[in-house]
Image (cartoon, rainbow, N blue to C red; front, side, top):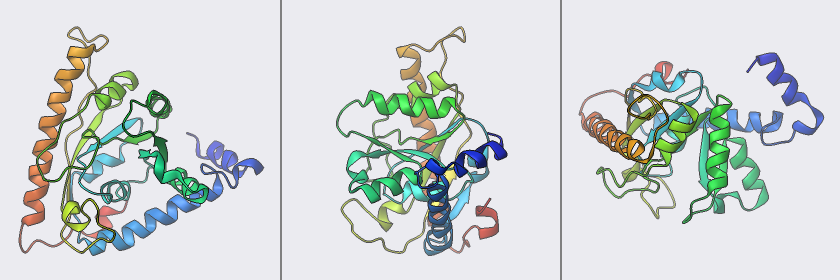
Length: 248
């Protein structure tokens, strides 16, 4: 989007306090700055392939999911306001909901197929936004890749957006499921090569078998990225990635 046009939109009287207006943009920038200053340093972040997160145009980040730290750490590596699907409970009370929307999150109902949320995600991708989707759905208890669902394939096929598989090691140990406070540990992120969206055998519209086969390919890519991230996190004597490289 043209910068001048975006600035005029943010400056509209009704948009100043909106989650996607001036105040919301400032809240997002402040949150991203804190992530970079605190989390990158506390977890001595090591990362490879992160420059792929900064590509323009519609793009789907598809990371493994081990901790609530995963999304913020990935979002801190790019200049995009990354869009996330978040459980509906995170949007109450209203001030928290405003903040969640400011940083790019929109609600989805857990335990059911929320078609409205998927359509909203598709609309954002069609507008050229960046979306983060956890292909495993929920947090997993180990480095093993859990069941990978076809939602990522559907979004990629419908939007034409490439998908970036991402492995993340160390966040499960830093903040496992049920933990109220994080602890300091080594974290590593590996961003793999982009996957083209699924298509049919003749290059046409992808059907269910095509999406299922593509999802299996995504799972293999996630497994590779996760193994590489674990090796990077466990490598002794290696310094963290310099902050000047991590911050775009």
